[in-house]
Image (cartoon, rainbow, N blue to C red; front, side):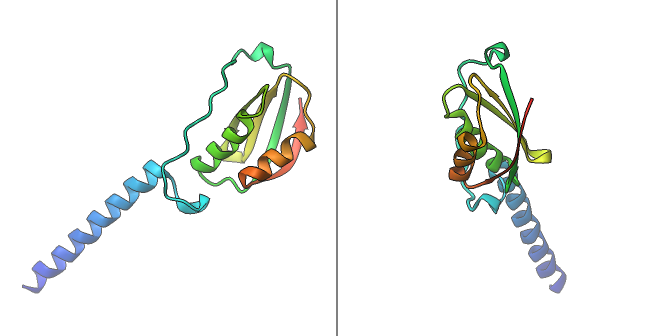
Amino acid sequence: MGTVIITLVLIAIIIFAIFSIIKRIKYGSACCGTHDAAPKKIRVKDKNKSHYPYTYILTVDGMHCSNCARHVENALNTKEGVWATVKLENNTVLVRSKNPLEWDDLSPVISKAGYTLIKLLSN
């Protein structure tokens, strides 16, 4: 009888772990302060790279998961004439722009999204 109870407890733990893993994969971790679904991606309409003569590499602190990356991308992509792509592996953002940008143009946008702009390199 004791073996049956232990087996049922172990099965319940395994089922709970599987559901937890599935939820984490689907919605990301809690590093963004939420377990909600990722925000809808804001896509730029003009994806012709030749229309964006200015490129910048931003280093952003605080991005830990795909939800974080989506927040930063969305914040930058709402800015007119900007196309951003996050590389979460090294916490960088490739920003293409139709007009020249400076620290003061990008830092407030990143800060409003909840992250910190550390470095801005122009190519």
